[in-house]
Image 1 (cartoon, rainbow over the protein chains, first blue to last red):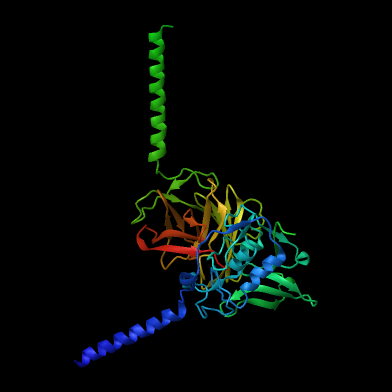
Image 2: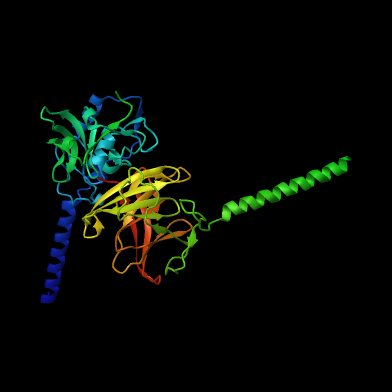
Length: 206
Length: 214
């Protein structure tokens, strides 16, 4: 084998290994391998405790920009995906996709009814954090921050999280899909005192 | 009236009905011309620029500074521009520090129906910030998204079924376009875009797939 051919073969092997490694690291293909597109189940009513249970199943799972599919094994199956890339197909919801699913909303923005989505159903829903903040869509209304109770939301133009519990010091335990580096979980946040955040409520539950 | 005359009258009436139906139906089937109105009811004008590679009629979208009373949730209007296309209007405002964009989307059917916020990296948002919460005149979901122009681009042309829309680029800022190519199931939209120089020369074209996110 000539030196040139050896060099070319070695170069090709290194090229393949480097790019295969990159693709493998970024693209766990979680959605492609695990998620489905099953129809949601319409349900006549939901409760705040029921929504909290839905949210808690996502706790310790991943975060995926534009995503909305997760399992319940308490680990991020797609860590370190590139942020703000909808194409990586990793595990988890983003903040608005998580809220949509936990609030069990339909895809039709004119419809305020309740739809139960499977945990592994890949769905984000039509709302961004900014849309939630504005109370867009028939299921959502803005609410004063002082009136917010369990499973209402605090939303800014770039993030939304759900009130899991209010702390005595005025902060809140927020359950949220926080970001690629954090995944989904409960964190103490000061959103209620921030002028960037407004209150949002899912309509139709007590 | 004799039976013969009555039959003749009936035959003429039947022929007339058939002809009218044929005329109406052929108009329905074959009409792929550009719309004659923009979303705000103003006349739609075909662009005077000839866009290389675009082989359907091209409607020139309107670009103006906001007028009339400020409307919630888009009260701030300093430095804002309104773009009116066939199906909707969008107002884009850049923050005073130049680091973020805000948009409010409007349709005749839904009123102010979409909001978007984007942090800018240089002059580009991190993603197109798609909204799909507005509806067009037929009640179908309408997408709004930002397209970031490349170097030297004077026009962004969005090609849809039967016609295209031309958006003039201002200060290299992202252009908020509309699309009817929305998929609610995947909360996404697709637009076929091309970028053109001032004389209509094609600079680049690409298919943008955007997802509702964040």
